[in-house]
Length: 324
Image 1 (cartoon, rainbow, N blue to C red):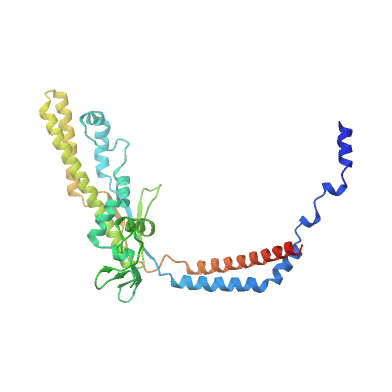
Image 2 (image 1 turned 45 degrees about the vertical axis):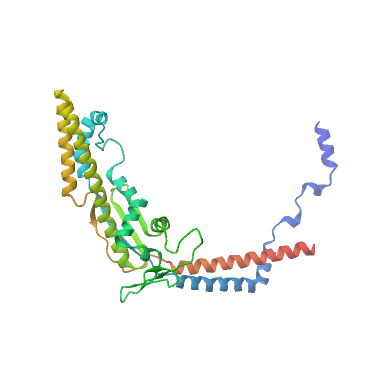
């Protein structure tokens, strides 16, 4: 068997098993090709550099306002013992005490902040749609905003933008909400300390600060009202169940549940910072956070240079294949 393989091997010429010399990359030749095409590379680099500079200058400054928040855990501390002691009986009675491993108030409040319903009410209350969807430039001297003339007329308060048939001149709530979530609002939680950073970005630092303060105020109010409604309904329900039972032990449980729900209601009514306490309030930013104009110019220049080199190499190899 070995002799047969050796015969087959000697049946082919030695060059059959050797890699063709043409497949090797000649770095000297590659450098000469790039050098011969240096003017094309320079032209592409300069063109992209100019385009990057113009693009960077055209982008408006974006300012960020942020506030550092701490969770108001008064309610959870008050309810944690009750939830572990009476959670089973409360569930049988149809009452949700919270604190039993479900979503806490802080997590729920963050999700409410991102919700469409909250944004719709927030937008209508403070009339932010024009500042969100049509703002073009902020005057640092007067502090006033100017709007895209083809999008919004601030004097008549009419929307003028041209859109497809499926949309209207005035941005819808869903469209505005997507812009708000993707480009304006950011919420970050420190896993070690539990502190929350709520931030908003806008071309006006004054508007950004206002939005952060309004968001904190409104989310506390919304969660406060929700808790008041839930606890009031729970108290009424427990009182009804209390009237229906004659078992002394169950009456004791209902009295304790009513007492704790009443405490929760009192905390909600007395505490303005119901979910979030402000540790460090938002201030008017003095420096922009973006765009990074220097980085844009550097990346644009590098992209132009790489594109120029690629064009030179492609042209050389295409020409070589045609000549062959």
